[in-house]
Amino acid sequence: MAFGSPGGVLPVARSLDAEVPAFRDSQICATSAGYDPELDSALSIFRESVDADATLITWQGDAGDHAVLCSSGSAADYAFLAREEQTVEVDWRTGKRAGRRWDAMTSSVSIAGGRVSISAFFRDLDADARLQVRESVQLLTPLLETIIALWVKRQQVTLRLGAMTHAVDDSGLGVILLDHRGHVLFANAIAERLIDAHDGIRRSCGSIAAVHLGDSARLHAAIDHVIAPTACDLDRGDSIPVIALRRANRERPLMVALVPHRIQASPGDRDRAAAIVYLFDPGQDLRRRLEPACHLYGLSPVETRLASLLAGGVSLTEAADSLRIREQTARSYLKQIFGKTDTSRQAQLVSLLLRSCVHAAPGCNLDIL
Image (tube, helix red, strand yellow):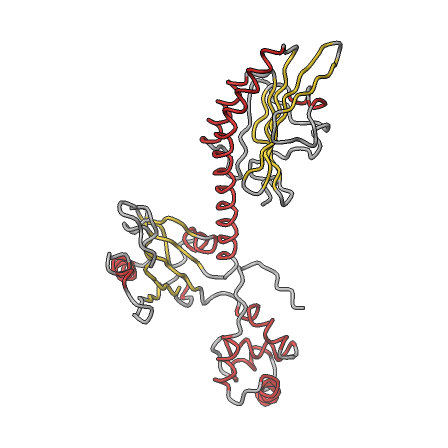
């Protein structure tokens, strides 16, 4: 978990003797998505109860990820007092800087696959005050353990969701999640690009609609069908609606498949995904997606271009014209392709190539090894 990566998390130096971010009269709560109210509340309670001149709370994961959870006062001024190796028990250190005595309370707790280190810094603390601070830390540590453990789990979920979103974007398909009202809960980058360009599909009152009015009526009827309460009970073998949405400039239509979301929601959960909308763009560069398979079958560059044209639906004569070669020469290339792919008919070749397509997001470079 790279909590120290860009996105709101402040990295903490591995040695607290190094410079630590200093935020006077403020604190930082680190989450990959920004502000975390539960963590902020727990850290505020801790800071106010301990009443230190400066506080530094850091997270160090077992995998090497790290983050500053709280930095209040001028923590960098006191970092020389903090121990790199800390124990679960509360520990005290005393030092002097600029002729003044400083006390540092340090503690460390193992939580959820990592360790939380707590450092509080004080000026001229007497024995009674030390005892009071120790009791406050021991009392509040269980609260911090619980809240930080939940924070770590939220980080893990956020990172997994980010990875899943990235994987969906790289599939080459547009994906939209709709709630029970047909409103958009999520649209991946490819779907957003098609929607923003009004490329067969557009936004309408929080939902989606077709650009052409006649297509919109069929799309809305299909959405109503798949988000119906009984739709999630359909068997895998049941049919799902597939719609062709007309696009501008007489391009091939955008193909849309709607599937009911099959995970049952808890009672009252009205914001769950009720339908998944898949967008297939026939206008994507087929040759780019076929090149890896053609390379693995040992096709030459001209054979790859010919195979891609045939898979795109053109005739052999049209493919020959596009390649600026004679039709007889194209037939010779086709025979060589048959031999390399262990096929004997053009339809068999096209079927093999389409089943061997590499699905990747537009703009990704496919490195054939």
